[in-house]
Amino acid sequence: MAWILAALSGGSLALPTAGLATEWDFTPRVTVGAEVTDNVRLSPRGQEDADLIGHARPGFTLRRDGARNDTRVDYQLNHRRHLSESSEDRSTHMLRARNQTEVIEDTFFVDVTASRREQATSLLDPVGIGGSTPRRNIEETSYYSVSPNLQNEFGTFARQDIRYTYDERHYHRSNRASSTGNRAEYTLDSGPTFDRVFWQLAGFYDRLKYEDGPEGEFSEISATLGYHIGRTLRVFGVVGEEFNDYETLRDENDGSFWEVGVGWTPTPVTSVEARYGERFFGTTRALSATHRSRRASYGISYSEGITSTRDRREFQAVHLSEWAAGVSERAALEGMSPQEWLDQTPPEQWFDAVPGAVVSQEALIEGFYLTRSVRANWRYDTGRSVFGLTGYQTRREAEFDTGAGLFEDNHRRTGVIALWELTLGPRTTTELSSGLSRTEFLGSDREDDFFYFRASLNRQFAPDLRGSLAYRYQQRDSNSRVNEYRENSILALITKEF
Image (cartoon, rainbow, N blue to C red):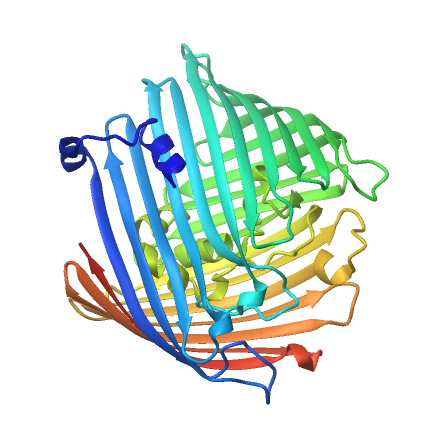
């Protein structure tokens, strides 16, 4: 924590009190509460144990918004104390920190990020929502990154962008291997000199290394040429070469590629882009479409590519991290970007407000995968009520045989999430959310169906005091009966800021 704060504050923690008062916004807080559950370990039917759980969540938010330096650090300690099942007691950390510094005006920037969160160790064991995953299937992940970025313009001819990113991912109380990433990116985009014609030259090099595990190198050079047909339609083509080196069962893992696409923007609130091409693993397709009206918004997307369990940067649309996916889904339901949702939602509510993805449901196996993902979302805002609906399907296929069995390697998840937020008064809101998903473990006959329902009442008692009361139900059905469970829970929380 000291290293993170030092890095984010410009290298020194010895900040004068006056500086903190005038430049920094430090908000400590504490959340306390109690939870009653009828199945504390998410055990199979007939083996359930009820319990009373005490929650203590001290934390803080540290912010500074400057002309050339923006910093935000959100930290929370999540402590659970069980009345009956003391073996389930645990303390975990939640951290999200970022700093954006403009070192040279409009030219050189440095981004620093850090995070820590809970995640499930395995999909095969019980995975719950709202922090209910049993301790035996919980691990923590820390992530750090530093990314200098150089931007400059060559008059009106072109704009250049050069970025390097170093990152590390560490797992705590886990057998999973830590990993590091090094990525260098270069783009040269056409400037205002070009009217209807637009072009880009681009390249990147990406090296991923798992400690005592697989290593992958991915690099690419490409050229894009496009043409604006009128004000609303554009067409473009991309050609390039990939140079990859990673463990795979394929005969070829790199080579030439091409792609053609069309973009249509008939109005400022409607945008459609479709792509089609060929890469070493076969045909590639991508689609993105959004539309907004006065009360409603719609969106649909499809993407595919080679990724890994540590989330390769160029394939963020897949979001193998289920917590990140949950944030994205919730943000889409509320008509925000993931960044906006995290900025506007109190940190102590992040996990509770993303009930379908409280912890990551990644596989324990580290490796590389061909992943295809499709998502569609709808949001409708009446002023007093907000309705949201999201459907998704993600299919992941391992690029090589890990020897650990197909359960963890290959799977397909299909699901739907629904949300209704109702404003009951100036300081009172209620929320109903529900989700249904099916996970198929390809190459086996294992299939899990998961359903959850959550209802909450939220009250702002004072500017610095808020509380919530929530009911949760979750159920997993499986063709392996030992992996089935049901749970009911009631959770009351109150948060005080200082």
